[in-house]
Image (cartoon, rainbow, N blue to C red):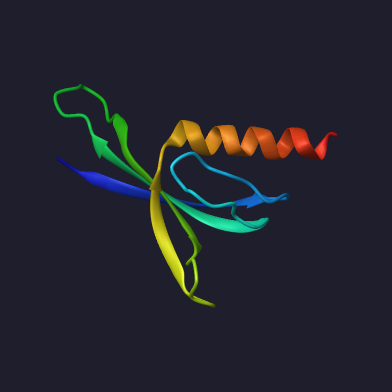
Length: 88
């Protein structure tokens, strides 16, 4: 099976929470990596998401970063909450 990774930068304008991460994260730009695997047996190329990870500041270590596994739906929920807070 073939796996590909897609990287994107997502910006939050307000401090935010993502389910599965016990602490509030500060506003700012975050790198998100999505791993997808090719679905075999189809007559066309198709991929399914197998992992979503976000790079965040490490807790308690100034300047260090850590990559945490998150749910793609949880990320979308955090983005929607951030966007709606901007409209308030």
